[in-house]
Image (cartoon, rainbow, N blue to C red; front, side, top):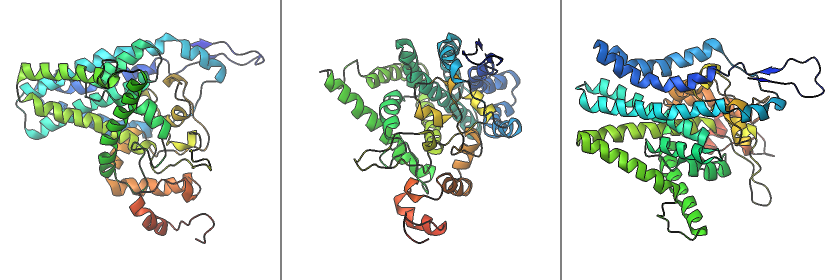
Length: 395
């Protein structure tokens, strides 16, 4: 897309979105998961069952390292035209049926093919990653005001039984992000495995409470069909009941494992996006307004193109209505050492994650412990380990 330069910029070149068609990688990427089982059926080669995991957890970090970072921003004068260009919106719509196809193809494959447990697990994880892409898509579309975007987001989130996400994310996480009260903001010294037990149930219960409060304001029952969580739950119930009716009890563990891993992809993203960062509490008891430096950012181009710019998370939280094509980088942001796929792998091995991130966190906040969200039981130990001191105290 080309946008005319604003007045007063004589001689400047018109803005051209160099990534306009590269965003189609976000459309294609989820298809890698069903491609593995399909190629296995064609060739009989079990290698293909592992190819998806190898590409995203090994290949994608390598591509991020090879191609590096893209720090370019669209000029503010071009943003209105970018936001109004329906091309960017339509390609998110295209992903919805592709996700449904990939999910249905893979769960059917898992329940009908006789596989060793390790091959079965590889495909189940890959299928869960399809739901992870769906959560990312639901994240983008769920912020939109249009009815069709929000309902497409709901239909996508319902695939993995995670229809409460938009409620929780928009009205819960965005309000409380980077505070000790937020179950979706991880703490310094907290492993992802401990975080999981706080984030997964915490997100659901907060979403349910928020939606029940909305129903109460409308004078409706908590279980009204206007409740978005109920709507998504009915889609999930109908889908899963149909699959179990068609394929019997063996479909149950398939759906349970796949849905869990899909939800865990969101847990993984939440874990790395705000690790250890906290907003200051003001004298009036409220927290300071969310700013770009309250989220970890990544400009790694390969993974950003596969994730609709999710990794420019700093701008997203500071300006949540901006669409993916308009998100910006800012100077001196807390910056992740890799894209999300590489950081996920590191996070799954806590000693590796802490070694990569703890000193990076301390540097990002300038050693100010009032800007660190500590795991309470580890606060004293971490402060001693890294030579930190409370404000006004001797180090």
